[in-house]
Length: 163
Image (cartoon, rainbow, N blue to C red; front, side, top):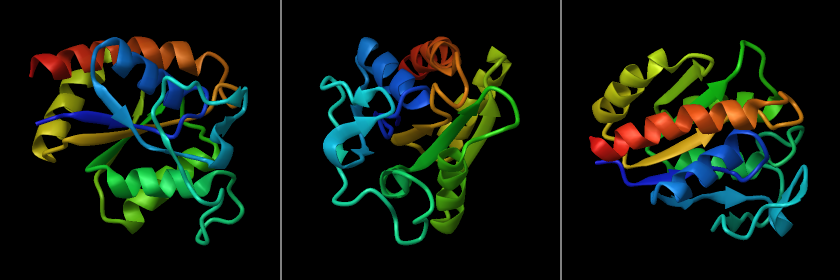
């Protein structure tokens, strides 16, 4: 049974997931970089995230904040990656690769349509997901992704709570 959303705290999809979950009374958590930094300064205090001891994973030294990404994948039962097209930034690609490396389920979706929601609900049930990592591009990489993700996740989370 679904219980918790985790994410890394970056602007865009991460913060949309955490904020929407909180608004709907869903438990949140996850890992963030040392100092709780994000591209707008600091990750909001309302997001109860733990700091990784270092910023970068030894497996992805070329990707900023890669350790939090890796640990969120590790601590989740599955990862849901939300895109607003086919392009993705290096952090989003690292989420997908980390899931493959860990043999964890990872679903990558374009969120410009809500028609995917029944499929996601089925995928969550099939994979017995209790803790779901949600990832995707930052706001600076894809302006407007925060609003798109918030709308999409609001519908998804309401349906999850009904299930």
